[in-house]
Every structure is written in structure tokens, then in C-alpha cells.
Image 1: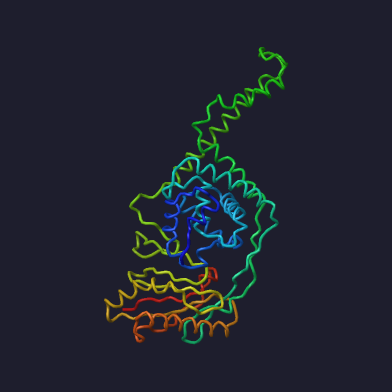
Image 2: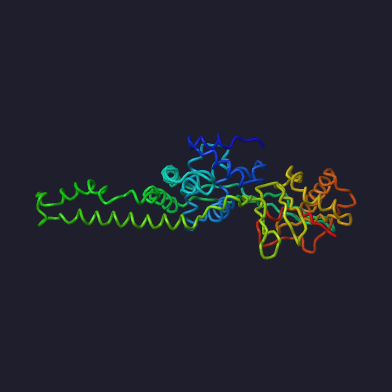
Length: 392
């Protein structure tokens, strides 16, 4: 999907760093090929939770409370509320700028973080006036039919409300307002606050500016001490955050949200991020490539991502003539069983047909019913899937 990511970011940050935008695009990788996963839905709590966990905590290395991070995300959402398409690249740029961490993506340190924090603080304050938001839910389900693979039900369910807590937004605004102070603690010398406290000292004193005795002349010195203590506190907080968010080495490959990195201890892939809607994730299982095909609710169309994702499986099968592909479906525990069975059969057959179009021999692609077709303990989006594994 062709998209001018830099132009979209510059709608909000006129001097956005092109290097940073390119690095974020590389980090997101295959997620940007799918229209749904390239956008961020601020009214979907599962989506904003993934942004918090995968980007703010894992990528940026933030250790703030969930409430503070959620409030920052809500602030960016309020800032972009007039934009019909909230591009993920732009959202991640604004969040990284808000926390002063554009350096992780090769950006320059300094004023950029402060400017982003100020902008996000205004947006978070405006968001505090919202009564709440409601997102269209995705309570669909899938089931199996005899020995045929499973998909999900008619995929219709109640929406999930995602009200924005005013207290959380207020915390984000406070944190954002504090960032500019913390961004340059060394520049705040004791002489700078002195003019600000001179007036209160005269106002509450005994009128004799040359005398230190009597009245409340000590109040100015107390205020100065408080200002210096605040500067020291935020300075230490900023340094601690910078140490926690260490940028990856130059030669380290970018991590895509839709491609699982290998587990260093087992050699197998860890759980990959689930696409928002239809998509394909290529992983490894027991040292062999595999594919997980996800579907939009109520549909059986296979994502175009299969063409690229299936390349590793095709190479393995071509190099191992005795290998076959097992196509197995899974479903969540909700929905009408009859509707689930028909939809799951159509989805499994769609994956088989798509693989044959990519050059896989028909006798090499076999529909296989798994021992347990119903998936519990996960969300419905994860259950709407068909797994393609290598046998032999």
C-alpha cells in the first residue's frame, strides 16, 4: 500500500525528522501492508493496550504506570481526532516525541521532546472533557465441522466501551507539562527563578527591601528552595528514563510487530503480534516454517500478505520432496455452531486454494482437523485463524 508517511506526520509536526519516520516504518514492517493494521483505533481498548505494551514499554522502554501511558496515548488520539485516518506511523512518531525518545529511531535529542510534550499536554487536557468512547466490538466466533478445519462464527458481538478517565488524562497533562523542565535540568541555574520570587518577597515583606528582619521576607527563600527541589526531582526522573530506554545498536535489525523474534533459549519463535483484521504471520515451529492466517470478521477472504509470507514455506517444501502442508483451523468458544462450521470450512478451503495458486501441489496441501479446535483463554481475533504447518 503506497503511503506518504512523512507527509502525514508533518501535518502535526512541520519539521518532522525524515530519518525517524523511515526508522518507524522499518520497525512496523509488514503491519503497514494491511490497511487495518496500518491504522490505530483509539476507541478499541485492545488496540490501545497493544500500543502501550508493544511500543511504549517494549520498544521505548518506558516504566511509567499503565494509567500514565494510557493517558499519553489518549492525548495523541485527541490531538488527531479530526483526522479520519489515524496512521500508525504518525501515532508512534507523536508518542516517541512526547516522551522525548526520538533518539531511539535516530532523531536528534533536545527540543523535539519538549515540543512534543507540550503539544501532547494540550491534547490530553482537551481529552479530559470527553464523557467516554465506545468501540465496535468483535465478538465473533468460529467452530469446526466434522473433520474439516475451523474458522469463526458470523463474528458479530457487543461493542466494547473505552471511556477515557479524567483523572488519567489529568495525570498525562501534568507529566507532559513537566517534561520540558526535565529535558534540560542543567540549564536551570538558581539565578533564573530569582526574579520570579522577588515580587512575592516584597509583597509579603514589611516594605523594607533592604532589611532582612521582620515581616515575611523569608517566604521568597522558601519558594526558591522549593523550585530548586522540583528541578532536582524532575532532572533525576529524566535521567532515569533515559537510562531505561536504551536505543538499539546500529547493526541490530528492526523488530516488526507482526513478525515474532526467535527465542534465544529454545530456537523457536515467540508469539507474534496479531494483525488487526485479516493478515498473515510467518513463524517457526520445531525448527520448521509455519503460517498463521487471520481473517476479518464474518469473511473468508485470504489476505494478500500470504504471497510474501509463504516464501519460506515454499522454499522448505521445494527442498524437501517428502514434506506436506497440514491446514488446521481453530475457533473461539462463542457463536452459532452451524454458522461456524460453514464459515470455518470456507476459510480452510480458501487457504488451501490460495496456496495452490502460489505453486503448491494440491496433494501436498491437506486439510487436517486438530485434536482441540476450540481456543480458550485468548481474544476472538487470535482464534479466527488457520494454521499451516509443515509435516515431514
